[in-house]
Length: 232
Image 1 (cartoon, rainbow, N blue to C red):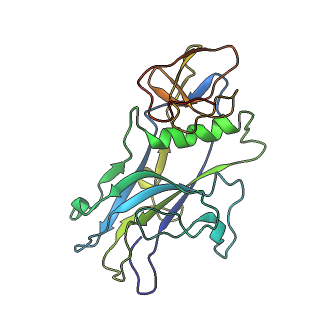
Image 2 (cartoon, helix red, strand yellow):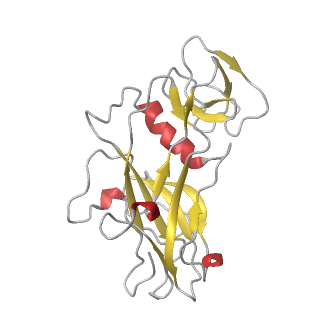
């Protein structure tokens, strides 16, 4: 993706999501990796990683559909989608520090603040009966410049696509699939102040965030929350 005389180009990646086995969830070691093919020697823009398109089950047609939030050339969003649905996952995913490093592999961060993990887990939390063999869903990512530029030399090029690109260097979503924690959850409140059953992922357990409350679970309220202290 890069600058261009009329607009800024963005990279959009579409990754099919598997069926999640019973008793499992997305863990904090989940990553997205890309391999850098080249970078403009005078690049000044950063590349931000966003989740877009709300896990569509249909691929776009040959004509770009603006509701898929293809385009963005700023640091805050939203994209060109009239309904705000894109979520920034990693700020400054690609930076000019990569100049002179073609072939380097760049990966999203892991751990307790893993936005990618929480984003993918939100799909499974909101679609508990999802079966990829019945209706395939996709997670959509956009890598875009964080500021507008008209220079095509201001660019990052990543290896992607099915034709002419080795599978070893294509963008890869590495899902960390882990056991659902014990029947005790701690209030995190990072989505909203709502406490409901099996719907809103406001809970965490054993450093795994993005959990929903299941009826009958024991709950803990402490000072480790990252969001709303009030509960409704």
